[in-house]
Image 1 (cartoon, rainbow, N blue to C red):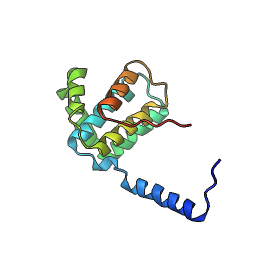
Image 2: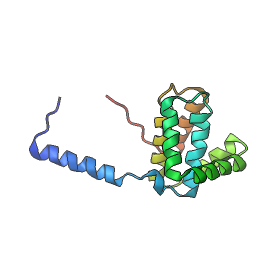
Image 3: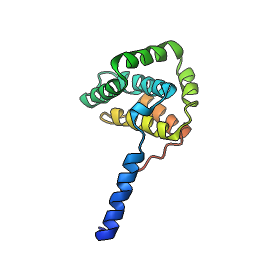
Length: 140
């Protein structure tokens, strides 16, 4: 166990606060990034069957942030633009801002993590983590 004292603890607190303030918010996503997020919600969270309470809350947070009308328009765009998973994956490769990638992936992972992530969802998230250069940390 490491015990931080005075200035070391204060420095750590400042670093955590800086990282929190640097974090991108859902409201900052552009149109394509929103399409990526909503498409992934549809593929990973909603299509997995009966969504859990945590998954529902995650979707509700996104809907609230975007607004119901804008969320539905984005979902309609996803459904009309991507008739195959390959087309959607190709689109996901066009998302370039790493901060947006991290936020989208984290949001999807948080929503999906309430249940076991397996099968198609696991494969898609693994592919996406590699394609988007997502650094996945582990708890020690």
